[in-house]
Image (cartoon, rainbow, N blue to C red; front, side, top):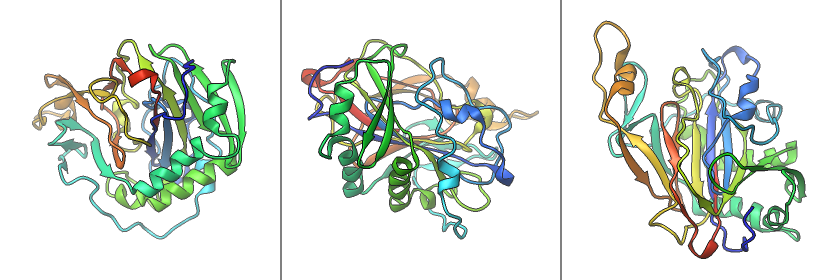
Amino acid sequence: MCHTSLSDVDTSFCLSTVSLRQHDAIPEQLSTLRSFSLLFLAVLACGSSLSLPQPLALPTTRCGRATAGFGPQASLARAPLAQTEPDPDVHQLSDGSFYNERLRASNVWEVDLPSDLVDEAADLFYGGRVALSEMVQGQHEPYGDMATAAGTFFCQKVTSWNSDLLWVSVDDHAAFATFEELFQRMRLPEQFASVVPHRAVLRLYSAFFVVRSRCDAPSWHTDYWPPVGTDALTLITPLRDFDETDSFQLRYQSHQQPAARSGGGGEEAGASAAPREERRYAYQKGRAIVFGSRFEHSTEVGSGRDGQVHLTQP
């Protein structure tokens, strides 16, 4: 647990989108999805279209309490979304996967977010008569419930990811509804309607803040198993610009665009076999990174400048 002041904490926002076909029940595994965090708000969205061919990858540590009852039920039915292309450097391959020429990686996008809405998300953590940031700073137990004006949050200390990570998830309908409104106002369903297979609308699944002040060693992982493709997405964005930019950012594995393979397997199988090169992504307020399956990443080793906590929203 970091005992430095959270008044200068850095924040980011993370979105995950999941598409469910024929209104299938949401898999229990979704409640334990892992998302990259310093201090993040993790947001997941589900589309009401695709049932997953295999379960999502499970983290070794359960982070946060199940919130599967909030997302799909909380979103209202809407007309089919007007589709836009979220990132001009991303194109779809013949097997349905996506490749980002700029980042040189599969199933990953960068998008702009309105700064005033990012500020609203940050205010949910820092604002209020008794700020959530102060409650987090004072937590000494492994788990805890935290009631705020926006709703109740569930906080967990995560000790197995080589850092002093805290995972703060929405834990009632009021907290979820606050972030679902931001999800809609940021027009994220419209931006990713062409990416997430869906029948009607994309829906927010859950939301988290995640906080850490250091990372001692990388913890490489993907958020989803390869068969998930872009049925599920994770979005991460800082809620403030970080003072430390030379380290403690995001590392990921890049590769050349895969060539289509004859005899089955397709380009996605080719990507799995392509030589990998480690690259870094620097967080910037007002920009978000969004990714689906097969995007291997880790928090970069380092620490916040002068003990500054990095706060992101996944």
